[in-house]
Image (cartoon, rainbow, N blue to C red; front, top):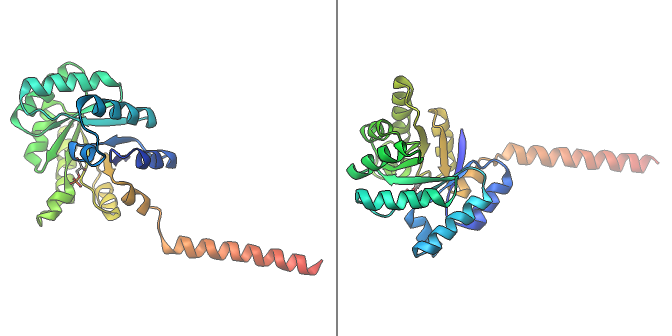
Length: 224
Ligand code: E4P
């Protein structure tokens, strides 16, 4: 399973990259705005900066909603760097854009997916990734992980190439849950990724190992 970090924050991207397990980055217009990145030139420069830090795919989202506007933005974004994957919203025009970009060899991430039917359309159109938003479904008392499972099963059954990218992950347990149902990618904020490290038995076990090592050293020292 691939790990993407879901942020436009350069320090957090560097910290995840330093860990050595990062496979890519996803951003969206809200995440860019959170970092105060505005204006086409600044946004494009930020994407290039992110591509220079990480080795894998970097999702960059269009902000147009009409066919021509999305196509123009998508081709421009894709030309910025070979690691860019263009994020297209799951709307009628978006499906057409994904299909056209596939024909042109431009990779896409179909975003804002909340149902198996939407995921079917994304795969039929030839999206590289599909992004079911699990946290936002959980927020409205629906089951985000179940949607990931439905999409994984459907894609496996029909042999679609589209990779299932579990998005809108809110906590560490979400990562485990989407792994259990076979998601290809989990895109997560930094904290849930770091949360995977934690176990109290690791901490207490390490403490005991080090204490035993110190005690043994003291005994040898005293015997001399
Ligand atoms: C990533 O591709 C999505 O845009 C992101 O995971 C959405 O997360 P949120 O629901 O926490 O805003």
